[in-house]
Image (cartoon, rainbow, N blue to C red; front, side, top):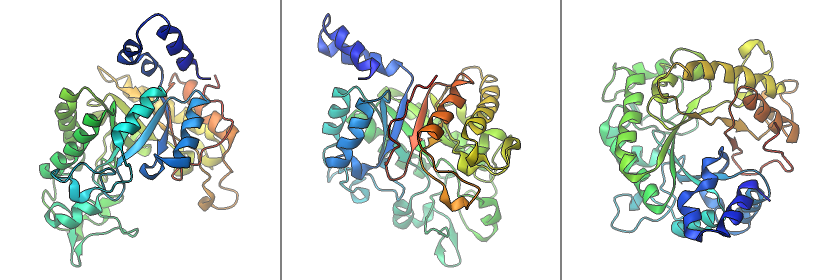
Length: 354
């Protein structure tokens, strides 16, 4: 049984139950969470994930509220401006929040921002165009234009929907331009062409923080791990330090499989502890230069990167997950999130292997 649950039971013996929830004492502990697809928030898949959290020292779920296609993952009501963009993957979002609250699980709403084929298709003037029409990546993805304030307001409005349901934190993902944008921008037409991409992304983050403040939620942003170790990822528009100035939590995606020969490590996927620790040293150095640094809560790898090819990857299991956590802890970082796209998480992991 989790330590924070035991603590809540002890307190409940002396104080009213509503006081326990009001103080949200367990949410002042380091957040250790998992990613949950909206479609997995009910039935047997959700029960399995709920059991995983309840049986371990995990204490948070990052749930898709605006998914990778741009869909709002619950029905907000026919009068909502987001009704046409919604899909009822989550049948009863308020009931879901109550279930998480009952189980002392910190609820984080994942909002995919600028990667959004739904909005791009419905508002072509808010996206990037080429000679064929709306630009699409090799995977068929479309991105909306981070230079346009209409796009900012659209996404922040969805985030407010999540806050009103009861999510305690809004996590913005894909807060960037498409990968390798600098190599294709010459063939595209869009509002703001030639302007500073990193400035646009940072201004969105700053603006979102201001707009969400009245709702009492924390705000976090996901960033590429590589954006931390270089002065600025100007192509995608991510300046780690500038983004970090305007968030409560910064979540760099530092999966060992996503690095190539970095930190003097020839095959990073084979050395998860060393990769994560070396990354954390650089992140700590950047954050300590800020007057009010946010909490660091990186995304860790709970999947096997077989696509790297024989000799370049290893099967990730209990040891590899714990090694990543140890790498963070060695540098004083005690919060993390685990990514597995299918929500199939490794069993028997010690999530506090200090």
